[in-house]
Image (cartoon, rainbow, N blue to C red; front, top):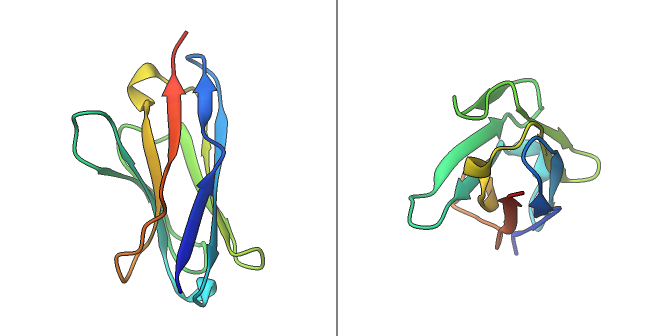
Length: 114
């Protein structure tokens, strides 16, 4: 069955960096676009970044543009989210998602605080 397992979250100071990973299994990874979403307490889940199946096309929410980078390794069946210049408002649970089929991971907590 489809499985998406996120890792790499944690507590970081403002201005710091984190790299999230999402390991995929149970489907032909290279055939699907992938996305990262996040949900902060009391807020709706929002799309952060998306990447095409081959990795050649990416898009970002305005709030993270120029700070976050989505990438993928189809051989390792993994999608990444490099997050730089983190701000307190980036605090959220971050989820990995396959672009078709409505599959989600369980999420990884990112907390940006001094």
